[in-house]
Image 1 (cartoon, rainbow, N blue to C red):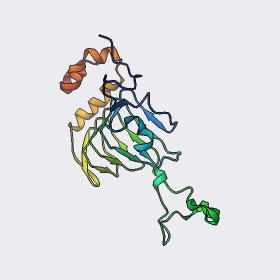
Image 2 (cartoon, rainbow, N blue to C red):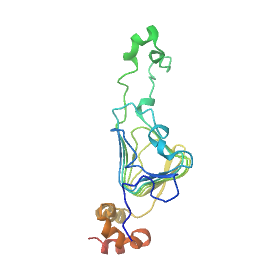
Image 3 (cartoon, rainbow, N blue to C red):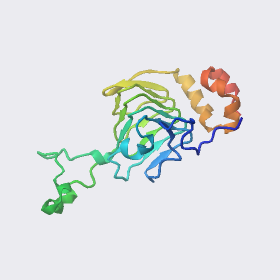
Image 4 (cartoon, rainbow, N blue to C red):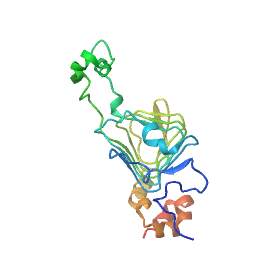
Length: 210
């Protein structure tokens, strides 16, 4: 059997609802690692416009490899920000006319930098990720959560705003998993040890390091 192809847009034959993001995205402000996918029965190929919102730059959305992104996950980017230091938050200058003379009032608003998602992150249905959040490797984000702050490696977070529920492993085990970094293994080696990656212990995974 041939190895899976990370350049194929629809990796599941007959399932147009599943797309790999790396061959899909065209924006220079979005980076997605190999085999990261988005699942949407509507139009999964519209990810850049329907799921990455207010993306006027220069902040980037960076998503690692092997991430599973459920239907309706939204990444809110820094372009959604409004001024909050005056009586009104309304962005008058974008309405045009003479109001456009005051466009400086809505440019250069403070931001939190890039939004960064690690490798092997699972997003449940309808998650919203706010600007500048960093989500660690191996994290799980529960359905319907609103992620307003960073999530640690191998953390499970949920709620609105999302809170850390627990971590999937002990601190020592997490350190070992980050050193193992199976997501960087050559595809052929990963394929040979797929059962260990999916269901093995940390010790078994460590024994499989190339």
